Image (cartoon, rainbow, N blue to C red; front, side, top):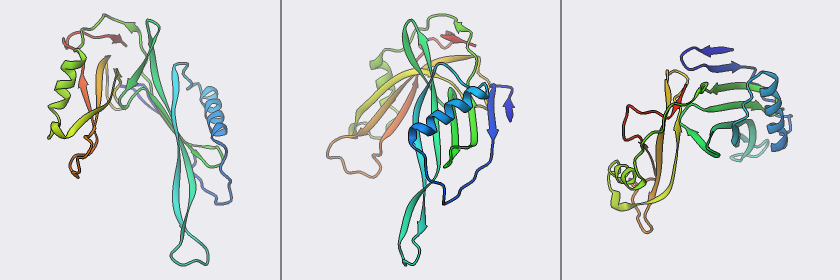
Length: 209
């Protein structure tokens, strides 16, 4: 186990293994085993929400069949994202921090665990944030060709940095997702995710560690 003092992040490395004879488990069983492991190791968090499970596949040649390959499951990745309860509302935590990532072998054993989850003392003060329209215009300025895009999604939350960074407080960000407009065929007009700092006054903070 390795602990990063600046952020309190935890890294654990187990044993990665793969046996073609191991049959993959059901998705629910991977989740149950991951939850049990986190509780037993004291890494569980009540405000952690499962954010997804991904099966890692690999291509292998088919025996006695030239030029044919098959896909098989190699490992499983589970991710838990942090949410903050504020005045009865559940607010997501964005960024490289505020998450638990577990890599499991096919048999459900643990290969690796990474957790970045800073302790929060509470609300320091209410922050003044940019209105949606102001932040939206700022996000569009980051697009090389704004006329080729439409707004495809938006969310806001608190940003927590990754394990190698110190952070005194969690600041609010707004995230805009842009997609090419209908009929636009341009290889350079790929979907874009743009994050905007939401605070109007950078001296103000919301969540204090």
